[in-house]
Image (cartoon, rainbow over all chains, first blue to last red; front, side, top):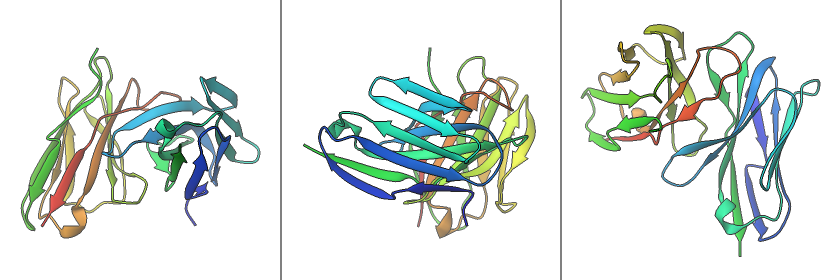
Length: 109
Length: 114
């Protein structure tokens, strides 16, 4: 079992829909990252959080430390949101990030 | 201010050859991490360097090595290339090596081994 599990693996939705991507992890962490990867490979950091909730534009990230679970929400989705969204955690006391396998999101116009 | 830069962008090598990939962190960042991303999978941690010292190593064979220079740039070296080394190699920099610090990713180097 992977330390970081994301669901769903693939998600297709219509423009304007509310999107939720989930991330569960099995280890104690110091931080959780949500990342966006477009075709071609470049990774952009969307959020880094260790508790509560963060919002940036149409994106919202939440984390529940007790349940070891985080969600990424996209409101009023748009075709330009189409990308792979990756959850990654930094274990407590560790140097590395451990990544989920990613969620491929496609928003159709 | 420039972000994390990596070179080259793309690279094609044959089995058995050696490759060197380069990464320049964001100015002021002292930590560089290397990740390998095979097509269709999430990135896997290879190395982290902080203040020119290795601070972490992933589950990769000794064919993989890295170093960090006094200006905090870094090189990843892979010897005796195998077909399975074909991947996107990502470099990330952060201000510190531990704890609650943002990581900034470079655009990656896509390595194809034939």
